[in-house]
Length: 76
Image (tube, rainbow, N blue to C red; front, top):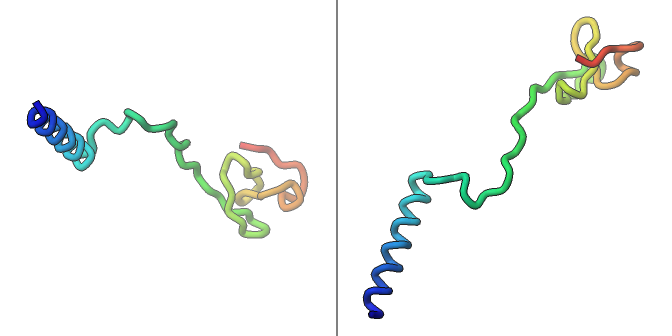
């Protein structure tokens, strides 16, 4: 009986190792996925890179804040 349990455990470990090496089912046992990457833009005034969703649209590019936008700017 012990031999049977030993071989069953060894087979299970082998299958799990092959799954891990082959990429297997990655959705099982993992937490939530990271958000998708976001486009980055450069401020025309200070050259700081920031996410496009946080940037202000200005003529000729993007600004990181209203001060660098030179007045009221619109978010895209």
